[in-house]
Amino acid sequence: MTRMTRFSDGTIVPVLGQGTWMIGDNPKTRDAEQAALARGIDLGLTLIDTAELYGDGRSERLVGEVIEGRREEVFLVSKIKPENAGEMTMMLHCEKSLERLGVERLDLYLLHWQSRHPLEEIVAGFEELVDEGMIARWGVSNLDIRTLARLEQIEGGENCATDQVLYNLGSRGIEFDLLPWAEDRSMPLMAYSPLGRGDLLNHPALQAVADRHDATPAQIALAAVMRQPGVIAIPKASSVAHVEANAAALEIELDAEDVATLDRAFPPPATAQPLDII
Ligand code: NAP
Image (cartoon, rainbow, N blue to C red; front, top):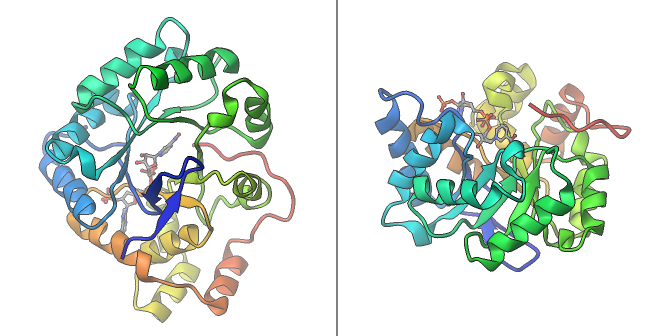
């Protein structure tokens, strides 16, 4: 079963995608990583998140090999490094990403984090890439709600499709303000590190809820993130077994008792919090 959400332009994507940070770095694990991503596509985890930063382009190259011949099945996301997001350099860097990925167009191109280049210049650059047909839409990552509100006021800024932010049970600050803000605008948010990079998974509360569902702590961590409407989780998994387990998390529905157990262990925010960033 694949659950879907939609961007404000009507494009539909799965709520569970695949991350690729640290994938493609080690020649010895490359085959397993490729098999994992390919299996994920088979299982409907067709949104793939990468970045020019990851392995200095090695992650994009590996993704390019996986999606060769299957481009139409995939919703492809990459990111530009903030220092490259200036007027003179943006198109060149987008071209390099397209080349490494072996595609003509990205489905979504994100500013990786806040840049020294003015937001006006970045928005104009993104809009030009849309006009040139190099990207279908653009968004941002690691921007807090104040910066998003400023972005919204810039000409073209209303076209920002998403903010990709750190969101997992250990980092729930966005539930207080950013999630409702985005929901008001029908803007999905992308949850990066939804498993807390693996660090969350030994928590006894996660194990307790996992036991009730005959599931694993990782599956419960994902189910908790995907409970929020309009959130797209992008776990990174480098084995077929992990990808299959993650896909199965789509079937898990947490009940009130599960939520109460998780809330006691990982309290939701009671006040506005600064945006957590890795
Ligand atoms: P994550 O997805 O929270 O955690 C990855 C870790 O969880 C890996 O050690 C992985 O192990 C393990 N794992 C995956 N599935 C599992 C399962 N079913 N059971 C047990 N362990 C499992 O961390 P992340 O890679 O930091 O975040 C995900 C993606 O978000 C990144 O890959 C990247 O695409 C994106 N991201 C974006 C930003 C940003 O600034 N925009 C920052 C960080 C991450 P194996 O590798 O052994 O499977």
